[in-house]
Structures are given as structure tokens and as C-alpha cells.
Length: 475
Image 1: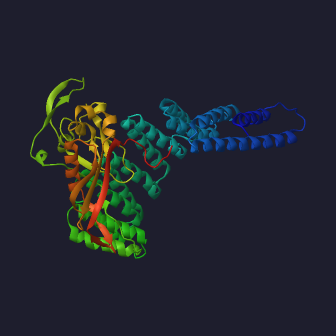
Image 2: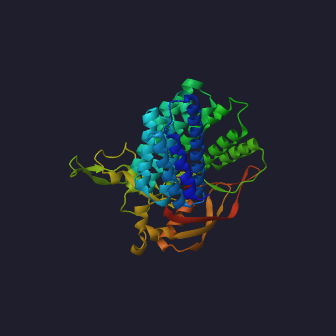
């Protein structure tokens, strides 16, 4: 059946639902109306399936036509606030985003969200899918602060719809967002709140404490803060209270604690923890080296002894006084070469960091509250990276075309040695930077029967494409 024939039959089925009937035979009329309603529902489901197949096949033009017709037909037959509009509007929004029609996508998403608010109230959990797509949309259009607001609203919705222990996922979801976007203090505040909630409702040794404790450790390492092992040591104490804890959870926590000690150059302690992790899984599978998520300063630690100042704006937009910059601000200042690098957690690469509001001036402009980062697996502040590149290579397209491939050895302690370039089109200064960065990285060492071993000929490919994408969703 062609698309046009399908649309004609769908419209015809709707019109039949509204044909006038005589007052006689009300019972038969009710039966006919129910049958027509059922047929209409089947036709709508059929049209949705056709549109979804087009979308899956990346035939977005056909998917767009189908979703638009379906939205129009459902609105005419069921009303402009019908719940049956939600699924077609979701598909329409995904298609608009895939085609680059961002304004149209936003309108469709806000229409769907308005329907859920009107029918279910502002806390409706049915709007979660639309909020997530609005986060994606904001990131794709270069509006990370809007994405941040949507994430906070998502937490607002989830934590009000789900209460008590059922709201744990809402807290960890927001904490993951804050960590991925560099809002480390906010992330730890949320994680402290969910830990208090779990302890209050389920006790001091509940296994649900393990996830937020692990996230705190990762958060501290990504911030470059000390003592990332402390929260995981508490997690081990909790595990020791549960003889029936799942093996995969035991293995994960011990491996994470081993990574924390490896990061802090305590390889002897880490080796025993890796062995415990291996024994818990009991799979006999050896593991290659794995990068540990972290942030580190590059070069000398001159910023810890120096003082840097910046002009502070007043409420009228003018400059009123000099303010001493925090250490974080000094490291992220635009006018210098790269001072810091990050290896993000898997799937948490948004390519933007939102500066912590606790350290920002209240009169800071919107553009001053965010910083673009580029690169994978290593991320650098884009404006700092530009400062070591020739002028001809400083635009986004040119930076995205740079690639570097390296070969090196990862020792049994997780340190990197014998770094060599196997392929690169980067300028000399960038190659030098990458060599220093790789040397400062710590890996989970290769593991043979749970024992750390030296691994030669480890390869790594570094790119510098923009990272602003929404992980976990294919459109």
C-alpha cells in the first residue's frame, strides 16, 4: 500500500466516526461507533508503525510526511490535547532533530509537554522523554545553560513523582549530569543528599549506597581533588556486611577502589584489590589496560603559588574592581596554553563545562558561564588549545581535522612509558602537549588472572572533533 493510499484510508476511517445517525437504533449506533473507534485506533497504530520504520531506515523525508499527517489527523479526530498525540509528536521531534530543523523540533516538544501538563499536571512522568530531547536540542544548538535548566526540571519532575527510595535514580541522574558538565560541587551536594535519604529510609549498610559512593569517588578524580578512595573504602565496609552481595557488584567496587589507588600512585595496594575483583567475578577473563577517568594539570604547578586577577563587572555591565581569581579560574583562563586535561567517564562526553555557580561572579555574562572542550579520549579547553595552533588551524573545522596516533607501554603500576607517534598531522606544539598528557595519564593495568602485568604496544587515537552530542540516543 502506498503512503498516499494509507493516508486516504486513515482520513476516511476518521470521517466515518463522525457521520450523523438517526435517533433510532441507539444500541446499534453505539456498537458501530465503538467498532469505528477501534478501527481508527488500529489505523493510527499502523500509521505510527509506518512512520517509525521510515525513521529507523533514516528516510527522514518520508518519516516527516507521515508524522505530520498523523499529528493532523489525530488532532482533528481526537482533539488538540489528546494523549494520542504524544507518540506522533515524539517521532516528529526526533525526525526534526535528525534533519536539523531545530526550531520546529522545539515547537513540537513544547506542544507535547503542554499536553502532558494539561492532562496530568506539571509533575507528569510522561513528559520525561520530551525533556530529555529538549536537553539534546539545547546541546546541539549550543545552549548548554538551557540544557542545564532542563536537567534540573527533569530532576524536579522525577523527584516529585517518585518519593523516598524510588527517587534514587532521579538524584543519581542529576549527579551524573553535573559531573559530566564539570559542576563537581553541585554533583557532590546531590550525592550527599541521596546518601542521607538511603541511610534514613534503609539503613547505614544498604547496598543502594554503593552507586552514589562510587560516583563521589569518580567525581573527585575528575575534579582533580584528593582522596577519591575514601568513599569507596566506605563502600567496601558496606559490602562486608552482605555475604549475599552480587558478584558483579563486588568486582566493580573493588576494581574502582583499585583504580583510585592506581591514580594516587599506590600500586601495591591496588594490586591486591584488582586480585579481589578478579576472584569475585571468577570468569578467567584477562583484561587489557583501560584508561582511568580523571583530570590533571599539565606542566608545572605554578598556579598554586601565583596570584591572578580579573576585572569584575558591576550590575550595569561596567567594570568596577579587581578580583583575585580562584585556582580553577586560573587554570581555565583563555589566554594561555592548555593547563588541564580531562579523560571523561564513558558516555559522559558533552563537550562543554558549566562553571560552578559557587565560584562565579553573580554579574558574569551568560557566555562566561560555560567553556567549550574538544577532543577524545582526552578533552582540552578549546580556546586554550587554539593558542598553541597556527592561525590557519584555529577554526573548528581545522581543529576537527587533526588526528594523532600513539603507541606506548603501560606498566604493571598503570604508568605510561616509551611513548611514540605512529601517525600525526598535528603541529609540533600539539604533539609535544599530547606526549606530556599521555605520560601523566594513569591506566588500569593489564590484568592476567587478576594480577597486574606490563603491556607493550598499547595504541591510542586522539581526535579533536567537537563533543557536543547526546550520549545513548540514536536519531
